[in-house]
Amino acid sequence: MSAKLPEIRPGVNLCCQIEPDVSDDFLTFLNQIGIDHVYCWFTPEQYNYEFLSRLRERLEAKDITLYNAGAVHTAKSRKIILGQPGRDEDIQMFIDCLAMLAKAGIHTTTFTWEPDGVWASDWKYPTRGGAITRACDMKVLRGQGLVSGKRYTQIPIDTDAFLKKGLTHGREFTPDEIWANYEYFIKRVVPVAEEYGVRLALHPNDPPVDSVGGVACLIKSFDDYRRAFSVVESDFLGMEFCCGCWLEAARDFGDVFSAIEEFVCRKKIYLVHFRNVDTTLPSFVETFIDEGYGNMLDLMKSFLNSGYTGTLVMDHSPQMVAASGKYGETGFAYGYIKALMNCAQQLYQGGASI
Image (tube, rainbow, N blue to C red; front, side, top):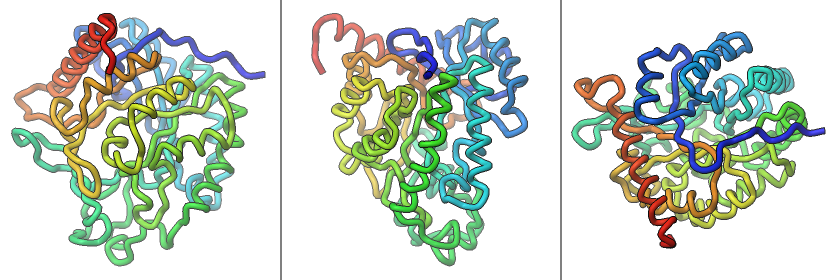
């Protein structure tokens, strides 16, 4: 029998990433700017019941909820994604972590079908005022101007091998292979997620293109999400709705407002990544939340009007100059997002439609 869905406060709840060894000062800062939900990525050594329960107790003392947790070695396992030897052991490790999360009182975790993580052509691209941000130019990632030894991925790869062949794992992996590997994984873990009451939030590929590094991308469109959810119908399988990815590939991903309405109605959106970009693929730059081409107020209104209940996260904000302090970009982005929420709420209460 499936566990009950976790209790979640109604409405849009602001959420912020924290480090596993988060300081008391940063938690006080979150109290001061009115954020009471957080999420965290852990190292393999930290991803255990004892560490998570101690962190959760620290957070609860500050009236902060640890909403979701994950670790790259489980959420982005190359063996699972590529169907390599040892994937069954990694799937069992993922299952064991679901039991650990449930015991620790954490009921949402994330995963993505990206064996190399997020890609970029430049991780230190200068944007407004010289702030440092991520740029993604597919001409570069497909071989035009690659630089030996340069970092292009979130998870380290052999960049020299990538430079020579354009492949990150020795050969090409077709869409059929990638979908078969997803089905193999999801059919095994969803029943366990239901048993323990831990929701699985699937993030899209970033960038959402047909393939990168020779590996076909799983989630790059509205219909890909529908297909992913149809493999196993479950209230415990949903998504991280990444506004940034949707804006990166707006023409191919499909209408973002229709997607919000459909997936909120189906209760498939567990958390939202809220960020903006300057334009669509084949080349984009991540911008500050108050610039870029995406209408963030309309997006906020759409989540509110659709009845979304879950968290909303500032995602990939440019890094400000040191004089802004340790929390400059965080304070700026969340202040802007809170203003958007207030405007959207007033428009909603006044009966204005999007």
